[in-house]
Amino acid sequence: MAMSKRLTISRGGQVSVPAAVRKRWGTNTVLAEDRGDHLVLRPTPSDPIEAARGAFAEYFKGGPTVDEMRAEYREEEIEAEEGKWRRYYHGDPPWERE
Image: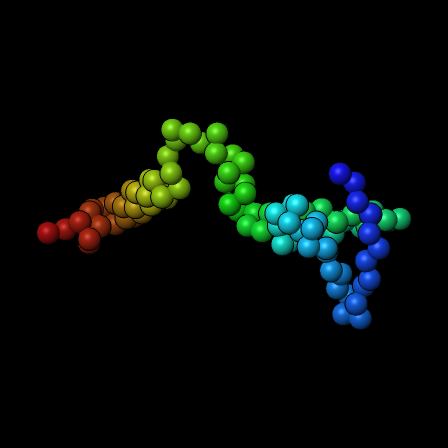
């Protein structure tokens, strides 16, 4: 469904995208691409992070969640810090002493 419509640019540099177009694409944001001799407006997701998460969902099926990955990373960091302490101070870190 091709559509051409002449749009007016306001003094503030704004262009109003027709409601029918916004509704058809289901977004409130667009990307303006300056192609040198013409301008292209492309619909973009209102929430690009959520859109990327949905686009890559099939690759992460059965894998760890972000929270699980974060917890694993924190555990690795704690182990690394404890190892540094043991190497430099020749003993257990103070938080492990009883």
